[in-house]
Image (cartoon, rainbow, N blue to C red; front, top):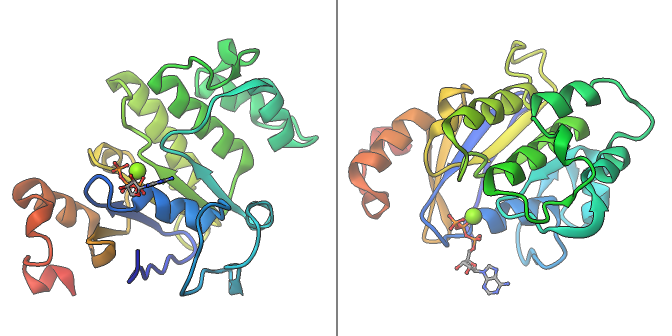
Length: 230
Ligand SMILES: Nc1ncnc2c1ncn2[C@@H]1O[C@H](COP(=O)(O)OP(=O)(O)OP(=O)(O)O)[C@@H](O)[C@H]1O
Ligand SMILES: [Mg+2]
């Protein structure tokens, strides 16, 4: 992909829309630094530092975290073990987060192994809450999640992005991918972007963009009123 230019300021939440297969998940994984994603041009600047050539480990240490669309199942590693690794020595809040995400019965199971679709999403967000990244990359948090669990997922994202604090008190920012827009009912997002033809084509109010997509479909993007696109 090319022509991707997104500037997320401290405390802001951005939403990324786009058709299947356009490269949204690939973009998030490239920002996180998964080794299979090669950046051939351009830069990723995080907190003023060029992190384009840093490893995934170094990016995570600097405060970038990801909740994957389709995280792998890891046999032999329990959810409990992952939580211990993410949390280090501090026990603070972890027990509360486990209950909040309704994951207590899953602690001794292998991570994501035979988890249902909704359970995988809750496990991803639990790990994000514990990790407390300053930039959360969240890929389709509500896909496959039932109406009751969507509230749990939505509130976890509110917490991860410190939405209850005023923007200038927040340390956390987010970039969220959604197809359903359901997450917009739980968090007030600041900007929306559409990725189409491998480019980020417009930036505007996320609700306005989502309403436009619902009404016109992605194929009309780029032809929409300039007032919304510029
Ligand atoms: N390892 C791979 N080998 C070949 N093609 C790949 C590989 N990984 C991703 N792709 C392709 O890259 C394109 C972008 O994939 P990506 O998962 O980023 O799309 P997406 O915008 O997140 O789509 P969706 O909305 O369906 O999740 C897709 O066409 C996908 O098939
Ligand atoms: Mg995807």
